[in-house]
Image 1 (cartoon, rainbow, N blue to C red):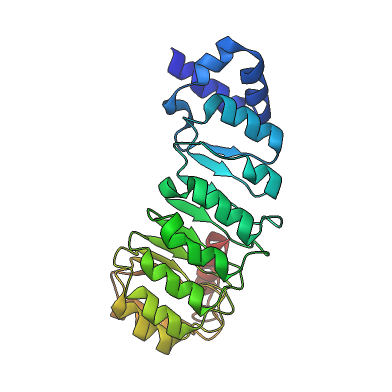
Image 2: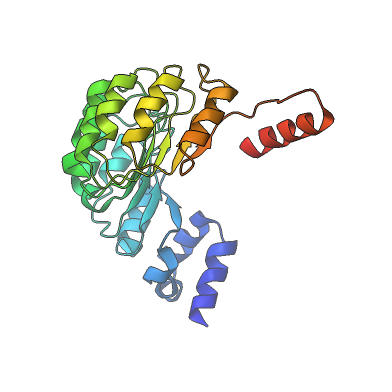
Length: 265
């Protein structure tokens, strides 16, 4: 009965209302103080008030948080979340290297998923800290940032990494990837979409070095449909996601092409 009540509350009540009611009502708070309630549930912590409530009541249960709107003052408050495993900063225009490194120093040891896409103030300094701050990292998203080859090479010290997204990373040269990939034996998913430096020749060198099962090369302008087809035939165990190609001007081909575009978006 209590488990069902927990599901109803979290499904139908906005997060801010849940937090406010938990703060005001001991009975309501007790219902939600269970690991089952919070496992995998994404909790947004945009300001100091939300962090204070979550930290006071549920810091031993919450494992997934979004900090895309959190400023550095808010970030500094987040300590003692013993179950924190999945953290999203994507789109955060406030966070700096120093603030994020301090956060990871306090919370990074158990983090398995870290999403840093489009965090415009971050530099290589953040990536260079990951091997010692987040040794158990399994999924990393650095898309849309201006990290360079030295940052990429630092990832070789994250042997548990299984998924790496580096979409639209214009300053990451292909040569650094060839060095990095060979040192990531557990990497299964790679996203290189929207990178102008991804070419057929680069992928023919990269793919034999990796145990990846999924590769995203959508909107990589130097790749043709013919080249993608050749890669798929050469590496049938790798699912390659690429832009759809119009085979001919028949109704069937046009229909298949449009459906592929719809599915991709």
